Picture 1 (cartoon, helix red, strand yellow):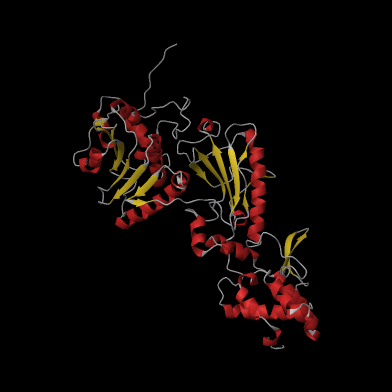
Picture 2: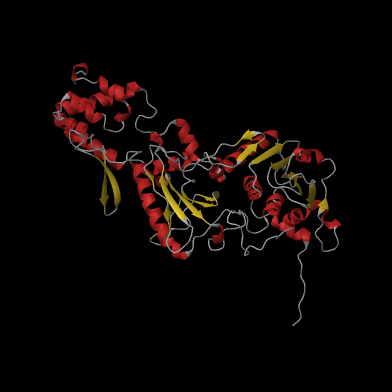
Length: 502
């Protein structure tokens, strides 16, 4: 059998690799993975605006590399993804440094030094690939003339590495201005705060990330320990596998959060997009949200408003990369078939809990009836053959009191209630919610206190005059009733003597 040698054309292959799908943020995260693998404790990212000559630099204080190590690191496909790796290794394909860098820039320079050793510097220049031996892959020694200053900080370091991106044609395109560079650094900061949050937060954190000298604060998707959370399970180990750990979370409803907490908890992509599974390898986030193709009755779950509060942490060992089909961008995963039923059950329970919290606006239990509980909800959900419909409760204290006193107007009042029930703008509410990516304002959230007093006083009078509660019992009941439980001072002011008879 005749065998032919068919090596790839260097220029064509690298230009193809540039289109893998990295963003600037995901590409920089791949560079930081290498810094972590080198035991770095400090990583500084520098964005330098200079028009078409702008550059981005990543500096770390890791163990550094000697000449042989650096040449290996700069070679495409330096590692066999099937080869055994250290348990702490964040890489797999031996491609991240190169493909991430080429996706953003045409010139990649890496300088490194071992403790007290010489500075070693190698460079890929995609505009000079034709200068190599025919069919070769020319790797240049030293920095490009004029770029030495961007690497000079390594001279005063005991050890470490610098990755420098220049000729950033995929970043500084036509119309890209200084403000765009600032905005890009903000996007990168949010992504890194999410991707590495478990490595940079807490008392045992061993890594500090900075952008232009500013320390990156971690973004915790799970709001660990928040008193308003509806669910935070213990860590669960999946059966039929080794080292896969799951923890389910249901975040507080926005009504239970301060305004600053609402904005922070939404995450880089917003509340709805951030729901679902968060897959980590060695505490580094790989997949942020999504339901991994899981679902019920043959239909995959989608990211929707009702389940926006559900987030599930999933840790896998790096030995499971192939089995979970982790891609080269470290952005997608597909759970093994034998684990899908366990994950589906955990996800379904978490989604159900999240839907309940969303529907009740953070109240974990429905209002209780009787003198010791709150007033029943004004709206009842009624299951019919044609789906779910919503009815105004005729047993609600204020509604029942009004109907009892309506006299000849009772028929008209009942007609108005039915008209309201049959014209609830459900479709409009969902469309507006999807457009705004926030739930509509209800529960007097945006109303002044004077607007709350009228309905509150009317309900207080109904509880005393119609439901025969004492004034003290009525006030206690209102303190257990949404949304008036948020206005204890107004409830405390209530007395029948101050409410005019109507």
